[in-house]
Length: 245
Image 1 (tube, rainbow, N blue to C red):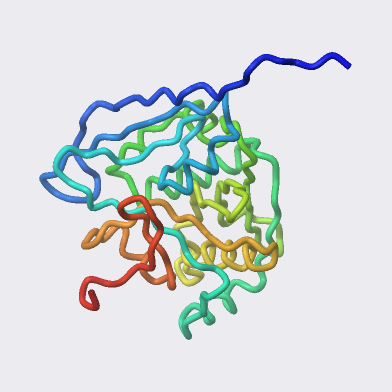
Image 2: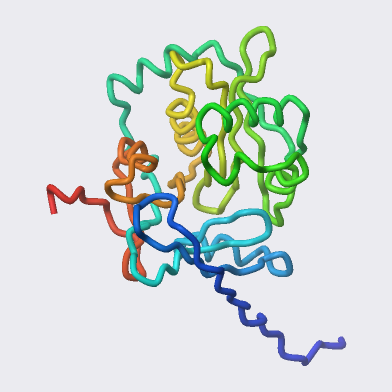
């Protein structure tokens, strides 16, 4: 039997450093990222995610800011998570919503919902300038297993969507958007609760929620979902609030 005697090596990752820009989370800070294109080697994604990287399109990135290390990769321990009274109420309010998992294919309904969400919640952010083609690329350009999780009312109206990566140890919430007029539903919280429930029912341990920044109003909602871990000094460790440290 012929055997292939050649040695096979994984090519080293090509790290790139982004341009510096104004930090969107903390005043008077500069943001910079280190990024890797995983298009040619998507199997490396989960390993990088466990090292605190996040995905956008075919890139995974991690903050590499020159004067700040406030961004902490955050993942929820789904098996140990317990609903608060308020979270249980939010689940009850949304029990009439149907969940469907679809291929990552953009529809006009998605784009209209995204536009309404961005204009209402983040009109001053960079994504407010996003074109349909840029939105299409954000949704559909993924070299790994990715899903669009949609939430519809009983009459079929789309009220929320979350772009979700499937990892070997959990789910990763890449980006979510929802109907800004459905304030009573607390859809942002509900989406996270539903992803935690999906992790539990599919025997996945972790829900990755991106980066957490202490004292950032935009990030404080993540601290509601505990117990959680942060990636610090090369390891994941239980999150301890500053007042308890």
